[in-house]
Image (cartoon, rainbow, N blue to C red):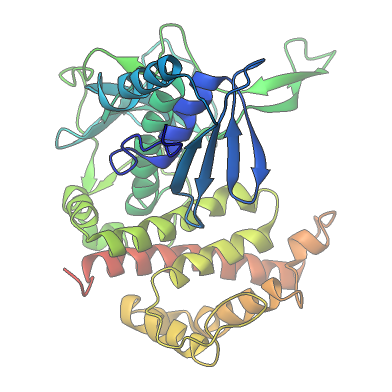
Length: 398
């Protein structure tokens, strides 16, 4: 028997195939560089999967005398989970916004955002992560892990785009379960702490629904002329989430990009979206993330690279400034940011500088240097968002 297993490798996603193999065999282990072994417990037979540097499966080999009947069962299981029974369904997840979502927005038939039910938990304070529902179409799979991964993929793509285009912080929960000490304040005179899992849910919530929730009882989220919407840095909490009046057109632009430019955009908005997560732990890391978001969109012309950070050398600073001038027409209104943000980024990433909030986390007194750094960081977030937005609308490869 030919030991090379050729189950439709060109038709399925490599990550989904490895997940389905893990589901079938129950375990796997690394047996070499980019090589994994799948084998059922107490079975003498196994399957070897080799990956290339891009994470794609390059070859699958069966062990000697792999039983024909088991091979038939394996093919059946993979077909059922990866090729058959793939149907369009409606998934949903909880998203969070610093502004309250009191209405709805629907983009074609791909996704919609709307308020959580009236009886769902609400923060009850001015500054909070306010929950909303994100519902979307996706192609389901009978395999629970693959199905969940496909739903998460859609949720991340849509929330990261909204985080950019709404000029507000839009995010999902943590990717993995997070536990933390939380305050129990039910008895004000006797506060205590508890080790609890972080998360959000409400009775009746699930990751799938039979159909999109009807929007007839909701009002459309208020829109603002986009010329005014993107005029100023991210403002303080305004109360209710508002939308630019060209949001649907911006989404059209994003989903009509060619594959190369979509990859650039998605990397950029992924870095951009890390700012809030990282800022809570390390403002220096958040600063690097924002500058890196713009680097994802730079045209690479110089193939010489820095051995330390891997960036093209000699021209990178010049190209960075040219990029800002092209996609942030008002950049001269922020001369300090224009002149120093790339230098700060380089100093941080090369170990020559650390922002005061990280270097002296105990400091709560007034610090002129910290205030200056915070102002640059806030303006940088605004500048980066506008640059990505304008790159999307003025993409040269339409």
